[in-house]
Length: 166
Image (cartoon, rainbow, N blue to C red; front, side):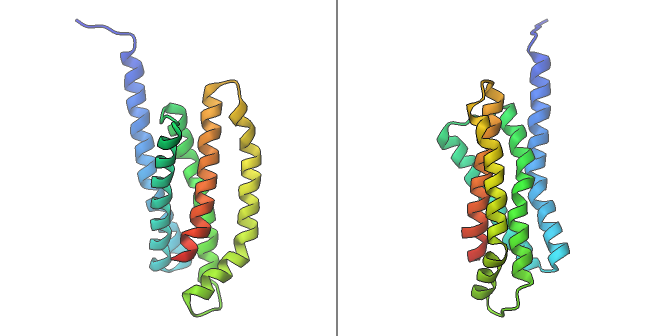
């Protein structure tokens, strides 16, 4: 009979990562459903889903390039703040839907002008609150701060430069 004290930890980690994977799968789908429900436009909902999936892939790729490991702390931070990053996309999608212009170019520009300053201000205050965590003594806090800052920057970039161009 083989006995190891780490087997119970392994079971907890496997369950945790399965939950994070489920959250990363369901968050974009629920976000798309909410956008479709409130904007009453499947085209806008699909564009937001496309931007959210691209943002998630860009975030995971950036974390890999920067050497941020996807450990328990980073996975928890990623699952928590992905929902926060949807806010930027939702605000732009709502402004786009309610624009008085007829063509896509002017509607997207009006959405950025209408909501751009408030979205950028929200991102700056979020970064201002998270950046001190990058110099924390505890490694989990540093990882949480790094993931939170990356999500904020990438979601802001995708909202302004990707969703607004669709």
